[in-house]
Length: 615
Image: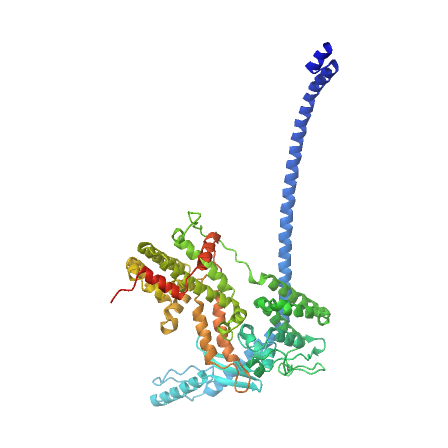
C-alpha cells in the first residue's frame, strides 16, 4: 500500500532528490546564458562593423580599379591616335603652305603691294606713293569700275559652280561651294569599290570631310561586311610593307545586279609584293597607314556593332581570328591588337551604346485605380507616356543598313529592315486600334468620350515630342470609319476640335512636310520623329539617282545624300525618355490591339453606330 502511494505520488526519495538538485542547478545555467548572449551580441556588433569597413574598402578598391582601367584604355587610344599625328602635322603644314601660295598668287594677280594703302574709290584723289616714289595712281572712271565689278562677279560665279575633279580612272572627286561654311568643299563623287575602300586609309578619303562616317552608313549598298573586313586585313601593313591577299571583292556591276559575294575582281592594293611604298599615298609611311586602318576598324566596331553580331557572329569570329594571328606578334603591333580586341568586346557587350544617367527621377506614374480597368480608366497622360516608351524602343533600334535600297518595301523586308518594318507595323496597328475603340462603343455619349480621350492623348504626345505617336492618333481619328460619325463629333468640345486641328498641322504634307520639319528642328530632345517622312525622303533619293555611273562605278554622291538622312535619324536615337514603364497598361493595349477590326469591319461598325441617312 505504501508502495502504491509512492507510485501514485510519482516520486521516490531518490527521484525527489534528483528533482530538487535539478531545480537548484537551473539558476546558474540561466545566468550564464544571459551573460553569454550579451557577449555574443557584442561580438556580432564588432563583426558587423568590421564587415562594413571591409565592404567600404572593397568598394573603394573596385572604383580605383575601374578608374585605372579607364585611364589605361584612354592611354591605349591615345597611343593609336598619336600614330596618326605625324600625318596630321604634315597635312597642316601643307595647308599653311598652300594658303601662303594662294595669297601670294592673288596678290600678284591683283597687282597690289600689301604695304600699300587700299584704294578708297573712284572719287578720291589720294596720293598712293609707294616706297618713296613720286608715282601716283590715277582715279578710275565709274564705267571702268562697273566693268571690273562685272568681271569679278563672273569670276566669283565660276568659283561657285560645282566641279568634278577626275583623280584617275578609278576615282573622281566633287568640288562645290557650301553656303553654310562659306567656302568650297571637296567630296568623293564616284569610284570603283576597290578605290572607295582604299580611300579609308589614303589621303584621298582621309582628307575628305565625313568620308569615313558616310562610308560606314552606306557601304552595304555596294560591298558586304565580310568583303570589307577582308580588304582591310589585306591592306593592314605588316613588317616590310603591305600584305597582298588573294581575297576578292565584287565588281560594281555584280553588286548592281544583286549577285552574291563570290566574285571576280581582285582588290587592287597600292604596293607590290616586295613591300614598296604604295602609289596613291607614297608619302605616307607604314606606321601612318597602320594607324588609319586601325582607327577605321575601331570606329566600325563601336558604331556598327550589329555587323559583328548577325549570321551567328561570323564576322566577329573572323575578326578575332585575325587579331590573334601572327600579324600582331611584333611588339609594335600587340598594343593595337589589344585595343582593337577591347573595342570589339565592348561593342558586342553593348557598352558602346552607353547608358544614360538621368539627373532627375522619372515623373510619378499614374496607375489605373481599378484592377480590371477599361480604356477610360487610364489617364490620358500616362497612356501617352506608355505609347512613347514603345515608339522610342522601336525607333532607337533602327540600323543604318535598313535605310538602304528601299529595303522596307522589299518582299524580304522582315530580314532586310526588321526594325523599320516593326515600327510601321506598330503604327498601322495603333491607328486601327484607336478606330476600333471608337466605333465599337455603341453608346453615343461614351463614344464621344472615347473620341475626346484620344485627342487628349494626342495633346500629351505633343508635350512629349512624340511626332510619330501624334501621327498614329491623327491616322486613327481621320479613318473613314471614324470621320463619318457626325453626331459623335458634334458632342466633342470646340476646344478639342481646335487642338486636333493644331496637331494636324504638324503632320501636314504641304510643301514636303514643311510645318513638321520646322517643328521638329525647333524642339529639344528627347524626340521621336515621324518615320514616314524619312522613308519618303529616302525613296525620293533612291528613285532620282542611279546607284552606278555609266562607267560602272559606285555613285558615292548618292550615298552622301542618303547618309545625310540616316544621320538625322540617328541624331534622335541618342536621348532616351525618362519614363517609368507600367506593364499593366502596356499589356492592356497589346491584348486589346489583337482584337482590332479590319477596314471592312470598322466601316460596318461605324454604320451601326450612325446609320446612313436616307436621301
